[in-house]
Length: 452
Image 1: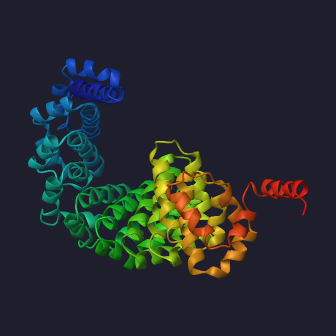
Image 2 (image 1 turned 180 degrees about the horizontal axis):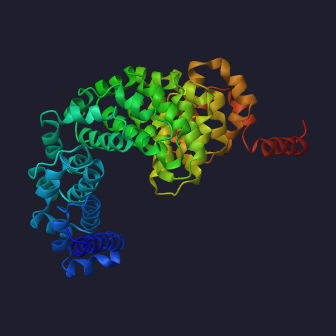
């Protein structure tokens, strides 16, 4: 081949590289998308997917992915231009870098709607890097993936792969399948998921996104039924989730927090296992440390799920000063926010099981009436069952504090106060009444006015 001919081809290749890289870069900016589309960029990129230079193929796929991600309309255009079969054919033939770029296009198309996800399935895309965007839409699409021969086994097999990104995508996909219902979660759990998702994903320190998606998958499975929660617990999942929760930064804690809450909520034995693994301590620390309200709300909810089962579990929480911590969160939360609601429910659940008077006393001093009514009602139950505590109750100022509360006469709070007052002699109750000194002074004055 003459030098002139070779030079012409080299120049042509350089221009193709320059063009496709420029388009991929321009597609990063949303303000450029409409202009690119109007210029007919789709028709120019499509043939470059078949270019004999791999870097051009990859850049073309990357540009298409960024365009597809922008809107459903562009994704529809990609489908109508018959790009999907071309991409799917390449998934089994090209190098892994191009496969990832092609999968990125398919994911960007599938994410917009159930219809577009169905188009991707119809085109034959069931690659691990793609199906997570398909499975998330509906149980029907997730079931189609789960019932595809070997797909779940491939996905769970990927959890042991050396490629961290492949493991991450597989965790996400399995989570998106499991989240829809118990049957799909059972299929995921039964596809050789354990212990790989724990040992090769959740425990993989230094790989935050992989660990987060593994925690997400465990959350979606554990939340579906008591049998699945037990399965996660039986493979050592609880202790690993607790360990991850202790080390995860800020927002990354959410899935682990909710996993512990789901597991704890099903029954007392599972909640005990969470406590034995020191999950309650990790949850309290999260409640104290995180700044995001929605994560605090999840931690409050999870603590309530533990404490609502039994006196013993409520005592375990009381020993960690959970009631005081929840009250601080409740008092500082927005009046109509989810955090306020979750903290209130957790307080009520734990208070109704708590038999530790020392844990309840601080709430009597500082909690608002919406919380105090539960505290006083529980104190009444405790004092009825343990009369020996009455002396300590009075000496620590609790009886005096009750007399200072001005509750509506027919309210639940006043009814509970009356129940406690009835456990003491009338003169003792009178002694601790706010107007007791004034009553004494009045009697002394009457004696001076009417001496015998």
